[in-house]
Image 1 (cartoon, rainbow, N blue to C red):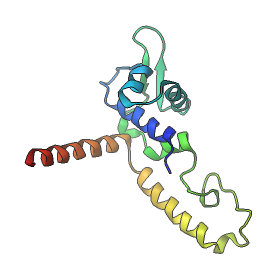
Image 2 (cartoon, rainbow, N blue to C red):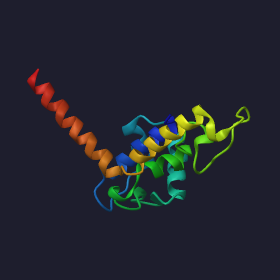
Image 3 (cartoon, helix red, strand yellow):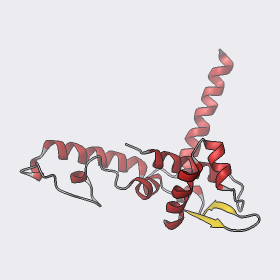
Length: 152
């Protein structure tokens, strides 16, 4: 499940992706515009900065910006930075595998095998979807909603 940290991080990146190229914005503006607690957002932006996804500039005219175009930022990468492995349980993880203490045969465990399929399906979507794709889906949804609203 996506945590609040992951959700807020994606909202913050979407906010930054909508800025004009070269522009920056203050964390307080991101927080206010997206209903994110400022202190929590500061920690999230710190994690994203350490991962090289956002950059910060201090001083007048400073703020946050993406380090690369939205088309080059994979959603799976962002979620892993903020929430850790995609696998719903540790024994299904590729990067943080931990065997279950109650499992006698890891290779035959039906729960683990099912969760591996879930992890693979999530990774297939999240590792191919970019921030630009996510924003494009948002715009397409608003256009459909707007069209439906005009017909009513």
